[in-house]
Length: 338
Image 1: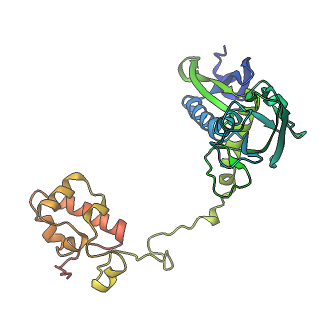
Image 2: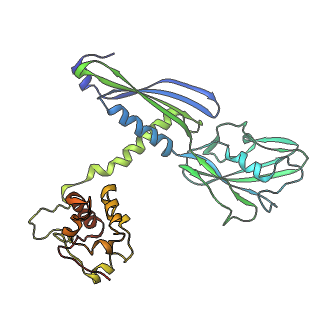
Image 3: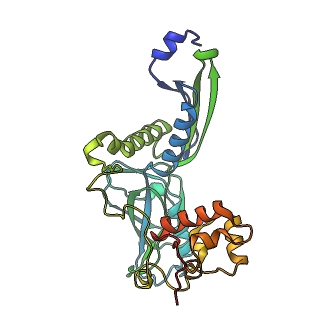
């Protein structure tokens, strides 16, 4: 453990896999240590890595299956133990691993009687099944069954419907989430100004990426997301200063709108709820029977401040909210709107 302040502050952040194991064919575990961080940095990195690992790491899954001569997903086929719906659920559980981002096709053509597993599927060269023993269907009679599957690489969970599918094609709710779970913890070391943090990150995957591959891909995704901010130039950001002759197209100061101007901004029945006022100001207006923006604009700023329990502070809040949401302000003199 490093305790020297100089050596800690100049040491680059490094990560190392301290434990890796295969709990089952479709559950792989990895634990990583990342350090040294300054105070607060480990949590920032841990949260970002957890989100990126769960949501940004791509996975491969079966998205569509075709059965010849089948009309709907609740059909039964003589000689097959499961319904088509049950077979689709089993196909959803298969965890393929693809080296390509292109859509691939696989075929299972089997003659029974036989218990069909993922290992009986003919996959393209760039795709392999993580668990060949994954169960698909049981053929109980000497018949031939052919299942054509579409394999895609994506992120997240995709629910599809049967619209657009025909000739025995059925969508499979694709689970392209190879990272099953992520935990992180923060640990302090050193003392005083030399205190630094270490982050321990645990990842469980279905094996289609290993935990090492998953944490590497998540890191790249985070870098890609932040890269655009590295290229922001001062001239790309418009600035305006008080007194500039050519500023933004917005009015330089508050304005009072007449009835014709208000027609394009709000309707007569627009509620004061739209102003998102503090509870005190909102309740005072309601008690004064001011329910709409039109009602409010029938009162001048001076009149509004005289509402019981309203006061100057609430008048300022209302004026600010009107300008923020509708670019108008309370009139100085009473303005009647029909």
